[in-house]
Length: 322
Image (tube, rainbow, N blue to C red; front, side, top):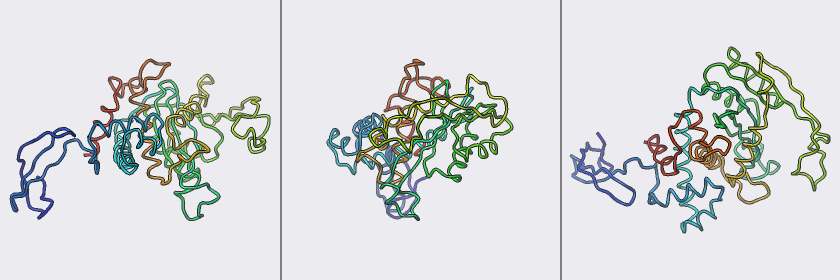
């Protein structure tokens, strides 16, 4: 039983009607007699017509920025940001609900840098939501499914939150490969030790990346080899690898304007950064067919029965929004 928006009195259903956003439920207040409607399977705070919302999400998922999306869709940037916030929050809840009890042979974990608001040197020391922000990604290597993601500072606290989330989403014994980031071993062993095969892979370059001359700052130094250290269990040597998740970093950068370097497309607020990432990852997991598998990562893991369209993604996300 709903309550009236005006007098908070009890209401009852008073039929349905259709508008450009789909079917809506009409209600009547038993106290003051006023009628109001509620859009079914709608997104919180979104008044834009359904076709426009789908168009905006498609463009955001293909790597366009907010202003370029607004120009193509012939709407205001504020409208794009409104859709971004509503759909992004719904996609976060959708991923949290579906990505559970995942069984996979191997997980690869890495971090992806971006800036939010300003460069780190200009960020206030007390403000953890500006400056350098890292997105932690856990990728199922064979199925190419992004199992978990978390964005925050590259520190012990955020690493612990991320690894705990990974542990809650995977079932059974799992093999994990990470780079040499110091907080990983303790956090991973703490949450997964009894069902864990874990190795750290360190790649070696001829010249330390921090000493590469300016003209080659975004080009890799000459690669000379790797070293592997087993941290837990008995990992299979042929599954010790971080190449797939590093390639996934490139995919995220390509399909999310906020990760573009040397541009004005970076996020101005951390919550919008996270919403844009949620849309990008859900579209990748459920809507984009992977060329090496011939299906989406969600289909490969049997989390979905078919390739979703963006319309289907928004509908499923809207169910969690309600």
